Image (cartoon, rainbow, N blue to C red; front, side, top):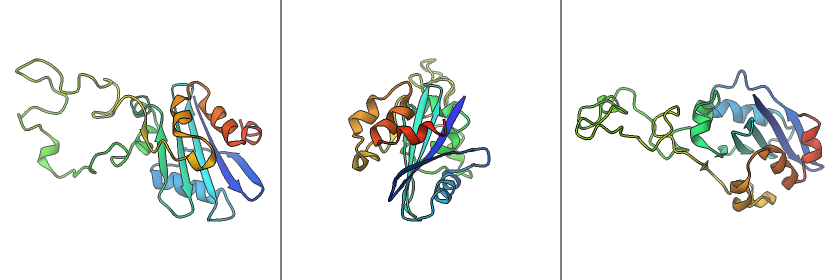
Length: 182
């Protein structure tokens, strides 16, 4: 089960609203949804997303700037319905794929990606989560400093587990408003 909420930072403090992500297909769609949640286009909006203590994500939208994203566990998110939205090639440190390139279909040795290497019998990504998309790292990815100016340090963000969304809201001073939409 997923929980998603929007926290908008206004002159009067934080305002929370729950949100449905059913119509969101891209990170840009998610950013547009967040921008619509506030009357002032320059306000900071956070999208807090979690899947039952398995992984969480914070997406920060500041006005028209590109969204900043942090995902606590990329491999777990990659197995979820929202991983495709959040785990962009840029976030994972890859170049966007060129679907027309023949090189994307086979490795230099002629085997397909993920196929056992004939010489060793080992899988090319043996350390990766077998259920996650190929090349998805286990552990956190993204901008772990995206809340630092709001009072949540990188160290605090990386140490969160379990009910991380509520802990983030508490650290931001927004726990009460988040509780109203939970």
